[in-house]
Structures are given as C-alpha cells and as structure tokens.
Image 1 (cartoon, one colour):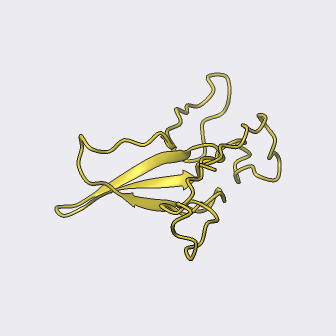
Image 2 (tube, one colour):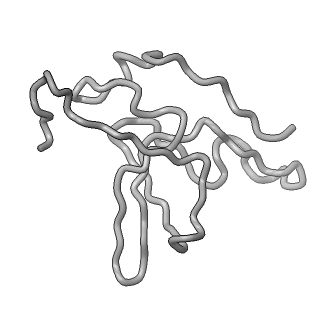
Length: 115
C-alpha cells in the first residue's frame, strides 16, 4: 500500500496534557507549524514545530531501509521542540505538510506574556 493519512484528531483531544506552558491547546499535530525563518548570505532555513500527520512510506523495493515515520523529516510533536528545514529557492518550495498559525491577543483579555 501507499502512504496512509490518519483521521484528524478532535479539537482539544490532547488537552490539557499537550498544552503549552501558557495553556494554549492544539498547537501541534496535523501539519508542521512554520514559526520563524533564518537567513544568511549562504543559507535560508525555516523553523518548524509539531509534525505532519502524513507519513510517506518507502517503496517495497527498499526493504532493508526503516519504514516507520517520515523518511524525509523526523517528527517533533513536543511543543518545546523544533526542527529546521533548509530551503532551496523562493519560488521552488512547496509543501502540503506545512502550515502557519495566525494569533493575536484577545481584545478583552490581558496582553500576551511574550510582548
């Protein structure tokens, strides 16, 4: 068979055990979260948190290679961990397994702790 895509987890399914230190739930699980980037004169890297639910499998033609997990990019489902992914070109990079989160302080609530 080919890659299997597991069903989506319900909102709050990993709360409170998977909440951040600030009590924010559902930060990881279905796509890699694009959180930041780094660039110098030689390289460009994005900082990713979480992991993708999609796990491509290697071909049966390569039985000696490990088949568990993502062969291209290992998971990091802990909210205090991240991975870096090197980018090749501004117009080349495409990935259905990456996402980003828009966040803002609630208008009626106190300001966020990281301002």
